[in-house]
Structures are given as C-alpha cells and as structure tokens.
Length: 84
Image (cartoon, rainbow, N blue to C red; front, side, top):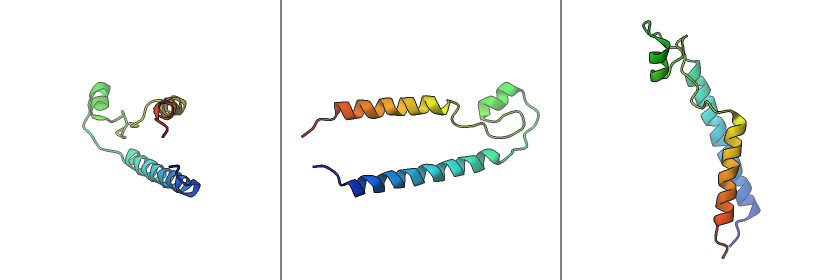
C-alpha cells in the first residue's frame, strides 16, 4: 500500500524541523567556551576542545561528502526494497 502524498510531506517537514533544532542546539554548545588549564593541543583534541577552549565541531566531514553518503544509502534501501 502506498503512503499518501500528504503523509510523506508531513514526515519530511517534521524531519527538517528536528534537524534544524538539533543544529541550533549544537551551535549553542559549540559557542560555549571552557576554561581549561594549559594543556597540549593533542590532549585538548582528545577531550574534544580546540586551543581556545571551544568545543570542537562534532562533524568534521564536508557537507558534500555527507550528502553523497546519505544518497548512496537511500538508493541502496530503495533498490533493495521488495515491492508487494
């Protein structure tokens, strides 16, 4: 049975809203600076901070690589789906 177009659009909008909210939250977290004692760059990177005391970005891959990977998985799922 096929899903209705309205249901697909609603799911798309909800997912977009969740992603937007998560990105806003992550940007707020990254903006908070922590006052740490003097450590080497390697130790700071291991615990997730940069040299100035800010949280490192959680996603270090470029946006284009993420999109290509996501599209690959979507195509793989769609092609492997058994049509009934």
